Length: 105
Length: 104
Image (tube, rainbow over all chains, first blue to last red; front, side, top):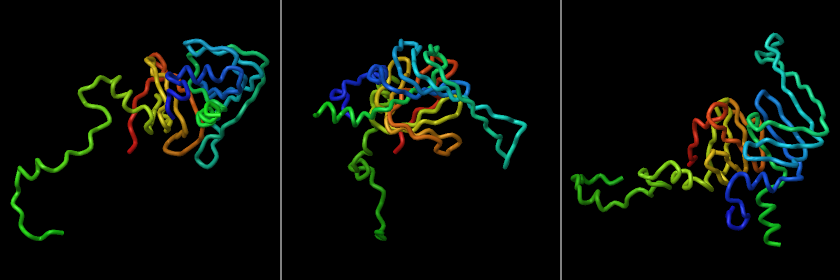
């Protein structure tokens, strides 16, 4: 994708385009969040609302077929501040190609 | 296959076209290399051992990385497919990238 068309020159441009959109955030410690992104900064501190957190808990004692059983815990939060150093990855629910089309139209 | 004996001729070898140049010259800085791989398929390996394969959309001085058509690989197995992703290039300890290599 041509960056001059999409206006994306640096990774934070992607985050900026996701403001007020639903995003998926992968965190350290086998945690994942989905929620609406309201604000961010250069540390990737995030303010999110309508958040569902998924926590994967590996139980080393409970082993089935040679693999540890993973328990999943979920919880919901209305408003959440995420400290940036825990963020591994942010996934966007729009696609760059979609953006490309909207620029063309 | 040509069976006729052909003595090695250095001049002939010098006429053969050189292999296609690598995307970035070896004398360039790491930044030049990274600029050269933007738009190509890359593997981003995190310290946790998780690989993210995708098209490198852009990156910045913190090694924050934007990927398109991202696949998450854990132990060589695809565990997730994401469209567009932002990978936080952490300031050293938690998430440095051990490997950022071009796929063919």
